[in-house]
Figure 1: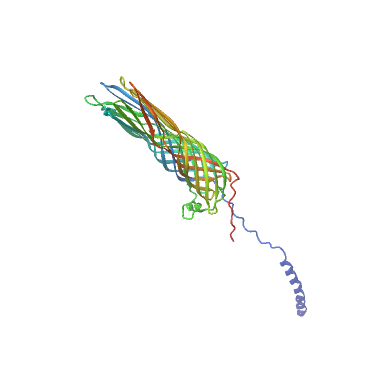
Figure 2: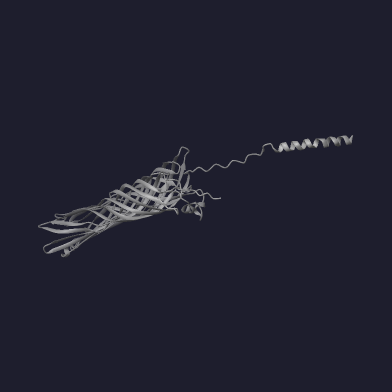
Length: 503
């Protein structure tokens, strides 16, 4: 019996071997690998902190009234163009809804030199012609706390903003006449007002973004006591001065870091690695664009007159400021080492000007009127550019020739009429730098700071008193610090930079 069973098992072995071989050829039934986690979706939700700088200004006015029982009352109303830089930082929080609407709140604090200034000194062959005036209004610092409302187009966020503003407003002035009258006043206070504006913010990485913004700010002016000291035996004149609202049209650019973690702040993290990132596109090609901004500086000039038996001259200095707008066209060529060379030309309408107007009304014969507008009506530049391409951004320096129309005029009535005017198209130079960020293969956002230097203007001046007399005027070079933002459209689509495979 045992022997029969053993023979049966031996007979079955070949069949089992054949079945095992066939089973080895069947398809594998292993479980599929787990799915990869979905790629993170960019969102504007979160806290942010950053910095910004820009340029702004407006026209500022002031009023002073002095009186005493013997001399009566004297009052002066003046208007001056103002401008200046500001720099500071901001912090805020944004929340993005599922439909793309973004709401947020932001607070910023800025050091500021925005303000107006007028200095004028007259000297002459007769000591009684001596006069000196020095007036200034300024916004020493300011801050805002504003709501933001925008709509997300992925990494591009256009928005409007508005809220409360606060800052230190100051005003001071002194005037001296050789006839003996010295007057002055000074006051500074922290005031509260409002601010509103709009801007564009673009995320260059998941945690860093750049922005360009226009903001209008308005704060109440200041009032304070003023005093005038006439020559003895006349008693002092007492009174008060007041300024109009302190306002500013501001154009600024900046950068924000979004708090999703601290990795981008570490060496080798996204914020630093982005500076050495390979270009995401080729900047080679022609482009055209539009821009707008604000600029200003300071300009001085001399007016001199001569008549039989007397001669006098006045040196005056005023701030300039105003908006600019225009367009640009250019060509870039990107080298293999990420260096970008280019040439750009632009043409700009300009509201940049220096303006001082003052009217003094007093007793009989004490009427003085001054109006001295100097303007850069338009300008253009043709500049070389050299930059460094990294990721979707281009950082560059630029410089070249500048040209524009400078128009100067002035009128004063102070017992006699003095007037002169002139307009010239002048040539000079421009230098600056900026950054450009590719929003799409064709469209890029640009922020730029430019210093412009043009030759001054000179011409004849005339005086009409008891007899006519002749003179001349000349200005110093007309310089402007310009801050502008814009958009460029690149022809050809900004092809992607070549990718080298690594094994």
